[in-house]
Length: 118
Image (cartoon, rainbow, N blue to C red; front, side, top):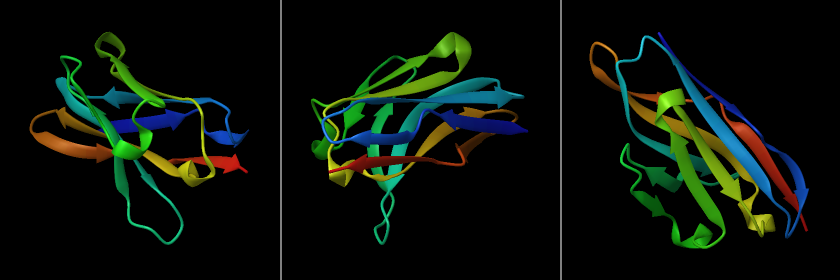
């Protein structure tokens, strides 16, 4: 059984900062690519950023220069540092990880709300 637990969401004013974390636990052999997605009301879930085990990162154009994704492989934990937040960053943020247990599977966290007030 694998669990992804997110933390760090909340309410912040536009221009402010927030940090999210996502910890994977359970019968894990290895954690491959990890990613943050977000879903705003009435919109489809979209990729925010992803990071490989070696640290290669990819960002959505809308967050480049403002968000930083990182991970601690020893702790099976991923982070998202968000600065200069905008109203349009308001969404539920989900972490996703490709995890090998007995097989490779895709796992999701429960989501954490980020609300940016204008």
